[in-house]
Amino acid sequence: MSARTDSPDLVMLGISHKTAPVELREKFALGEGELPAFFERACSQGADEIVYLSTCNRMEIYVASRDVNAALEGLFAHMEAVSALPRAVIEAQTYRKYSRDAVVHLFTVASSLDSMVVGENEIFFQVKNCYSRSVHAKKTGPLLNRLFHQAFKTAKRVKTETEISKNPLSIAYIATELAGKIFDNLSRHNALLIGAGEMGELILKYLTKAQIGGITIANRSLHNAERIAQEINREARIVPLDEIGAVAPEVDIIIASVTAPGYVIDAAAARAIQKRRGGRPIFVIDIAVPRNVDPEAGKLDAVFLYNVDDLRSIADENLKSRLREVEFAKRLVEADADEFIRWYDGLALVPAIQKLQSAFDEIRVAELERYRRRRLKHLADEDFRIIEDLTRQIMTKTLHNPISTLKKHLDASRENGDAHDVRDTKRIIEELFEK
Image (cartoon, rainbow, N blue to C red; front, side, top):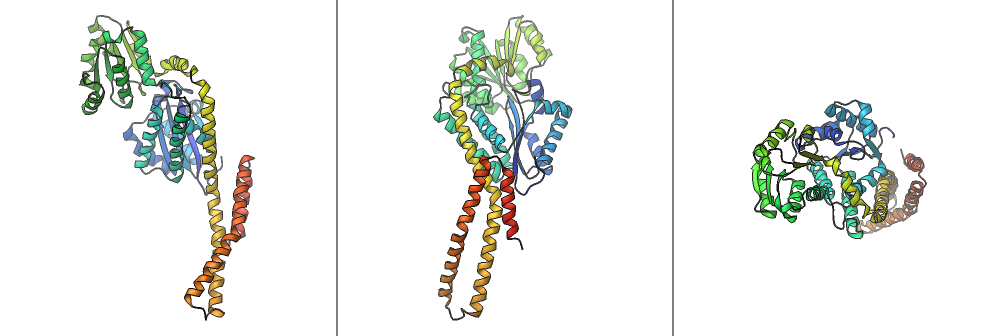
């Protein structure tokens, strides 16, 4: 990529379930309270606009920058700092996408075509929420605003014009489905749901629909837990996070999805829970990133621990029934990406067109003033305004063909993949009218 330019370019740096395991991905997760400082640091290191996207399966940073190299170096420095991993390891596990590739990737992600479960609905709202955080922090501008709004429109097209989301099977659904496979009759068993966020709310809906025998919700905010219980399952029991150890021995299923800086259930807590259960089997599904349950807990007798990556095999089965819709959905994504790129490429011509129009208008105004002082003194103001309008129309019509040709030349060059040709044409036009 080139160094600093007059107009911003797009770049995305990411890591996902396709490139790295959960124990590596969780090292790069940022809490909401950490975002303001991260945004400020990134913008001081070359980013003009930035959106931080984080889900249980991916962390991606979208940047608009006039100095892409500097912005990327800043992002890599951040990843090194938060993970304590060497640069070579980070580069091996991450991916970078520029310009149109970044556009296609975002549209693909927002449309749930890159999800572990293709067609799941949560990713759309997760992308919207992450984008909103950047908007509220005033870290987006014309480029990323247009990009993300187009991504939302594309995702809605994919959902309504294909059957990609028919019978949606999300991570939350798969977690509940796994519990149902483990126990033949969920109505005879109790569950503990750790977390009452978006994922927790979905799991509560699915467990309630599956007629779980009883359910306890443990959450940092009791108010939020009470709200979703009131809306979905009024019989749910609500407890604070620090009471997990007391209620866990009473359940057969634990599904964890809370945002926490460390393990909510460590190995010692898991041993204590199993001791009180008398060694009866307990199934724990940890879909949080960073993880809520110490992996060491899975080594204990009769503790069956699954994390978000373990759900991949179920996701693969669900994918088979949807593959026939994927190609059509990808064509929609490509078409919308082309439309965005046409707008995006047009931004490069705006300064040249403005300079062209400004140069002609300066000549027009100067000549009119000169003629009015010398030869058109006898004209009334109203008559002179008619001449002004006439010269303005002549100028507009004179420039119409050159500007249209420039835009056509841009389209042709883009189709041929020759961006340098466009920049050379733009430069020549600007130089022709520089004083």
